[in-house]
Amino acid sequence: MEHAKRILLPGLIVAAITVFSACTLTPSTPVSAVEKQNSKEVDQQPRVPNEYLVRLAPNVGEPVIYEYYKRFGIKYVRDLGDETYLLILSDDPGPHEMKSLIQDESRIKVVQPNLIHWDYR
Image (cartoon, rainbow, N blue to C red; front, side, top):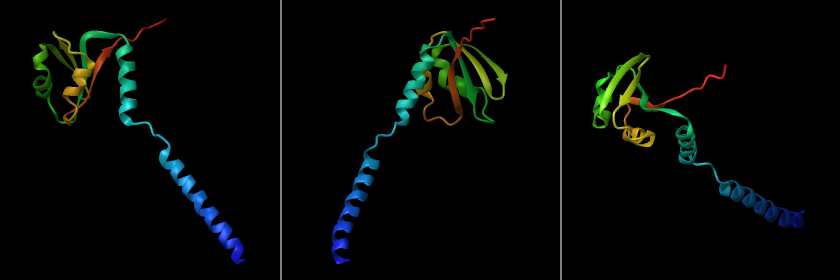
């Protein structure tokens, strides 16, 4: 019995260490890589030039849109309902710049290009 313990116990320890190290070495997909892939897909989709959809947090008004995007020459802001606005700019900085400006802003939930959806009827 003592001989079996001496052989079995080190084997179990080695097996446990191997399993643990394999789990810790398994690469996980970083969130930033997933976000980059999603933004590349959005960039490749056809969009209406100079137009963005902006969704605000509840009880936040239209002035926050002017606060962040007035430097790009706001031509038009239209309330589409449900805290969503259509924003038309004269100088389009591109989707990446639009998103990076509000990265740490909690009053603006989402800004995305106004995408073109084709109807194949």
